[in-house]
Length: 314
Image 1 (cartoon, rainbow, N blue to C red):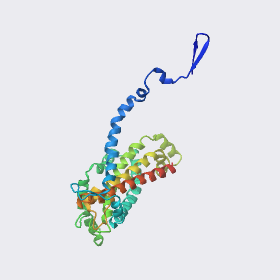
Image 2: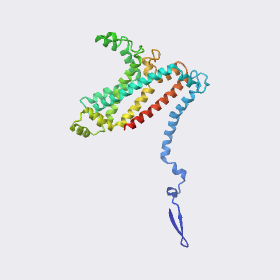
Image 3: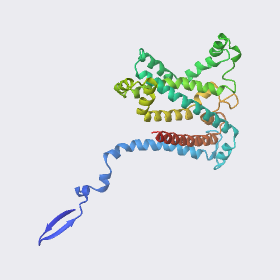
């Protein structure tokens, strides 16, 4: 509010509009340099993130026999087909088993290894390199190594024979009872060390004086790890849990393809591999994108659940 004295002692009060009094147009004030700089990033996000998601949903409404085939609009028939297909439920069950084993095992073990690394034991630099190396190896190279490990005449069966357990030998990749577990084992081998190094980097922000004070009070390493280190990096723990959940859910197709091809039967078929198989092997593009939409919905619901679980325990 401003006051102006006019001739004749007439007082005129006007409302002070703040920045508007500078004379700049409203549209120009709202269009700040920050808006200009974030525009390309927003355009990129809409084009390459939102766009493919919408395209995936649109394609799921078509019967599309191959990328160069003639597509036919069938509405939600693909969803009815998928939800009545036993293969989909086999893939859903395998994916649930994979996530239920990999995430609860990998994250706590990686955290404990990360805590050990940040204590800087003798040779910790070499250990960090060794832990991080599996994450740098390509999926094709890892698959080739473990095909040799799990082959009928491979390393694992040879070790079992050496220790007198030859009767336990089996074709691990070709047995319905073990094919999925070989994929899970490779996931754990390649992910625990890499995640441990990330946890160690996060835990370096915890002051050593805190651990020393806890040690003077009689706290051992186990109590320091879970009663001091864990609460101080709980948010990072939650982030790593969500990332590993998404990684396991969406990226298992390559490893399954190279190790078992989803077999024998559907014993190691996961949802992400089912998307690949239907699109590129069976030429059912509409079906594959329907599974992709359901896979995205599962991932979104899983993220919400993990986030709420972490907040409740905060």
